[in-house]
Length: 217
Image (tube, rainbow, N blue to C red; front, side):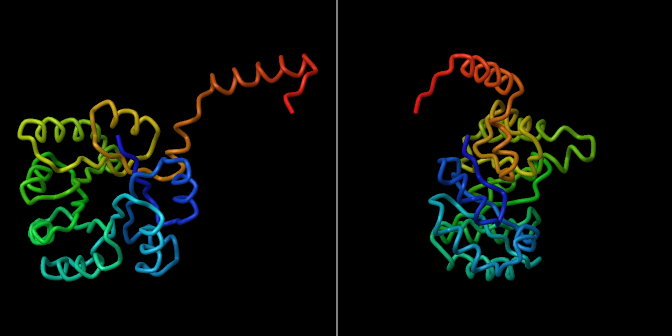
């Protein structure tokens, strides 16, 4: 499963990228706002840093506006993936932009039917929102499983990009189901390394080592 980092914070991306943990980056207007930086400037910096797709979101609500904004965002770098919402206008924009050879990430997906439409429109990525479904007491991972089954039935090339990930359990379950990509905040990705038994084992080793009175260096 590929890891995309869900942030516009350059330092956090750089840390994970140096460890080989970054296959791409997703941004959105809310993340850009948190970064406090100009959208084109910060997106260009991120694109220069990572080799994989960097999702940059359109903000127009009509298809023509999305297409125009998508073309403008695509000028930032070759690895830009244009994000459009899963609306009828967004699907129209997706079709035009993908026909032009651009990567398109169709976002705000909450049903398998929506995901099927996005694949038919040629989306590069479909972004089902797990956490926001969980907020409604709906199991977001069931949606990932449904989309996986539909896409496998028909050999669609659209990649499932599990989004709105809130926990390490989301990451594990997305991987078990077979999501192609998971996009998560840096803190969630780093938390995947944590386990109480690892901490206990390391503490025991260090206590035993101290008793030997030895040094490696």
